[in-house]
Image (tube, rainbow, N blue to C red):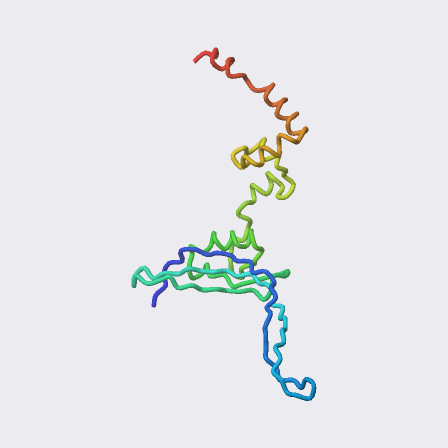
Length: 175
C-alpha cells in the first residue's frame, strides 16, 4: 500500500480519568463463603495525541489513521515528526505545537502559527470589551448584553461615537 497523501493532522488532549471496575470476589462472611462484588478505582493519566489521516491516491484507498501518543500531558511532551514523509503535515504539526505544546522531533520550522496574533492581543490579557471595540464580529449578542452593564465600556463607546462622523455628515460629503 502506497500512502502518498496526508489530508489532515489533528491534536487531541485526553484528560485524566478514573475508571471504576467491579470484581466478584469470594470471601468468608459469617463462616460461609460468598461471592461479594468489590469496586476498585483505577486512575488513568491523560495524554496528548496527534492523529494523521493518510490516503493512497494511486490505489484509491484510505483513510489509514495513525495515532501517536505522548507519555503524559506534562512538560516536554515530544513526538516524531512525519513531515519528512508527508510534506503536507508541516503546517498542521506547527499548529499542534502552537495549540497543544507537542514538540515534533525532526520538524524544521516549529515557530508559532499565531505569532502575530499573540503579539497583537497578548493572549489572555484581552477583555471582552477589548474584543467588542477592536473585533465586534467576535462578540455574541449575549456578550453585548453583558457589555452594556460595564460603565467603562459605555464611556469608551461614547467617546468613540463622538469622534466618528455622524451619518448625516456623511450624506453631505462630496462624492
